[in-house]
Amino acid sequence: MRLCRFSAASLATVLAVSSSATTARGVVLSEDPLEGESISAGASLRLYELVLRGGPLATPGLPREFDPAAVSLTFVRPELEMKRSSGLSLILHDELSSMVSSIPAALFDGSLSLGQGAQAPLYLPLQSSLVRDGFELKNRVAWAYARYATDSVTLSLGRQPITLGRGHLFTPEDLIAPFSPLQIDTEFKPGADAARFDWSPSNIATLSLIAVAAERDDSVFVARGEVALRSVRIGALAGFVREDWVLGSDLFVDLGHGTDLHGEATATWVTVPERRPWGRHGFDRAVLGTTTELTSKLQITAEAYYNGAGARGPEGYLTELMSPRVAIGEAYTLGRIYAGVAGEWQIHPLLELDLAALGNLTDPSAMVAPTLRYGLAENVSLIGGAYLPFGRSPNTRTGAAQSEFGLYPEVYHFDAKLWL
Image 1 (cartoon, rainbow, N blue to C red):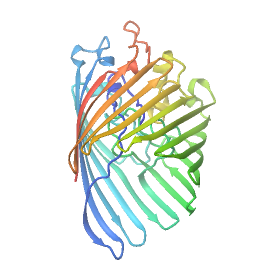
Image 2 (image 1 turned 180 degrees about the horizontal axis):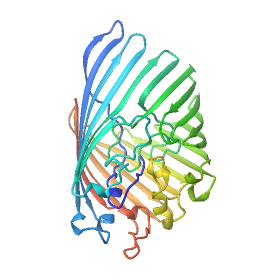
Image 3 (image 1 turned 45 degrees about the horizontal axis):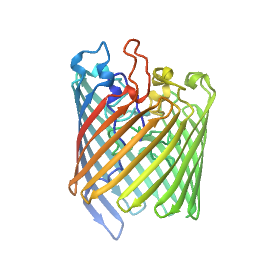
Image 4 (image 1 turned 30 degrees about the vertical axis):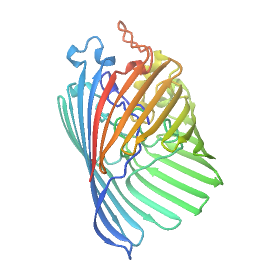
């Protein structure tokens, strides 16, 4: 889960706690089990209906009819996967999205896809859009990559999802195309134009080399190694990320009885003056947390996070919002010290209650997000919930921020998801 670039109105539109990605159902078009070859196709339809109230929508100077506001989002995602006996696979995902909003599109930042996080830089945009006041229609190639796999080596090339790190709510190592911790659409990880090589010489060690192509000096080169020692997995990362030198390490410990300890930390050296947060040549980020199964139907995750690139207090939040790291979705939180907790409770095989809370401990301020999920059918889910901010609102006279989550409006949503 991660926080997005926003203007006064778009600040409110990315307010959902990350849910587990659901594998889309598919139809096998052809299959040869003996040869290990197949062609399958599928699709997903995701609908989001939001009502936004208060917060930045009630800012003096904006028309009163902007508060409350309504936003309707639709995502249609066709998928195709082909597998060959040689170990070669081809994965293609397209995505057609639409947005209808009572808030004029001019209020939203052009780099923000409403309901999703800020789009990380891509080498080939492969997208087109039509924008009118209150309406946006966009089509893009979401994933398009070839993958070759043997027993010990996997090589993939093209637009593909890449995830790094151990954190659940906060992920300082996941620098390529991370989710926001407060984001409405987390069904599929954004794709990056990349070449990736993974080598597992044994079942206890893995080496990954990743190169991401992008324009405007936003390319990424990362090497990561991992070893497993019984119930402990230790990873190390080094790379050149958008002209920053980054070193990282991560840890996962299985404590038994459904409980783990996980964490990750990065140290960043900034070579470009324009990207130095608050004039500093370097900064650190770190998260430490645990996930435990209290019962077979109740799971809790708790994490503490330090963001060394953030502002020391509310007086720096608006400056941080304009920083290049926030603009491309590399960073989302504005402050420095955070805590978060998320719980999943299966009330019934068809009904699940999720509750998440993120807090900025310096302000202090918080966002609380209850969500109820109902499995209407095997391939249909209905979701409803609210995103409730707690914190001091911006100064009505000067517009200055007084807390991070006090910048947000209340959000009430109803979602429907269908997999084919």
